[in-house]
Length: 405
Ligand SMILES: *Cc1c(COP(=O)(O)O)cnc(C)c1O
Image 1 (cartoon, rainbow, N blue to C red):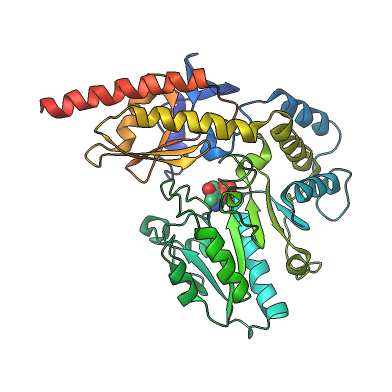
Image 2 (tube, protein in one colour; image 1 turned 90 degrees about the vertical axis):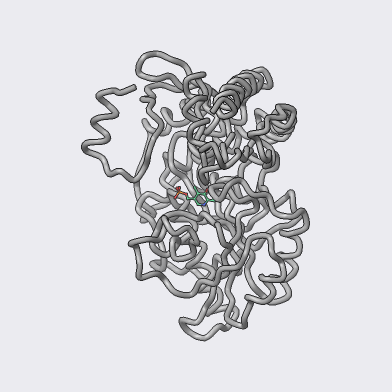
């Protein structure tokens, strides 16, 4: 299938993505439509950024209303929207302070800067010696400093020299954390469930043990909840599954209600207070349009019980996936509505995604062998049945073909 829009993007755009061949023009709830009017179930929701569904009416109203009032003023002035937004998210998450940015990567950079400066001015680490520990197979974004923490060769190749000061340990390995900590360690940055790394759920007691080790050594535990946060895994924050409250959290993606890029770094006062005027900032971070939409997005999450829905419908989805009993499915894992299906390595996961596309189901592979299912949290069990039936047919077709060879 080709389209003038695909050719145009191809011709004038950088080739830093390899999209599936579909041109989307409209979205509503769990559905999107292509340029020919064909409807698709969105099982990908923009890498979990569209948890509320496309064009949620309450969020579109909040956007329209605020757009006609005031949009961008920079942080050189106060607005009537930022304070209420920050108070709201702090009260829901139990953190004392929040610093608004736009994209996830910017909020992660904010976390790294906060951790380093905290190490110098509070913990007493000698100048320029602060170390930050991260995990292999992580995904925290795409800036130079963030890819300096990456172990993914494609994320790094051609982009050196890298930012120093990072130590990488295996994910899920508590002893490795204990060994990696030195007197200069500022923070341990970790995803409660690895998203881009293939939807990897760590051992049940992992986060609790990490939290205890960090506490013992006066190291900040920072959870990157950009993908897992805000109800995606069936809890407001995925770290709740581990029964912990980290020292800091990074939010993004769904925070913008599927409409705008909005991100936050949240922590306690002692850490946030290392920032003084002029230390750090963002022209657009915390703008009243973003603040109004994000505040509404959090409100809707609770009003519509989306967190409990993710938990309940996610369990149903995983149970249906497991009951498929296809020899091509090697593993079903995840929490809530962040689910990965590991496919036999003989079959590229992208092939499954392409075939699902013809059934009107949108999703995207991660890590070549994992098909990701992360629909809007408003999805119903009936809609999940549609996905299961399509997947069953796709797997059966592939199975017949691969055994016929
Ligand atoms: C998507 C993601 C990021 C980066 O967010 P951007 O908005 O793309 O910069 C960081 N961490 C995690 C866990 C993510 O899933």
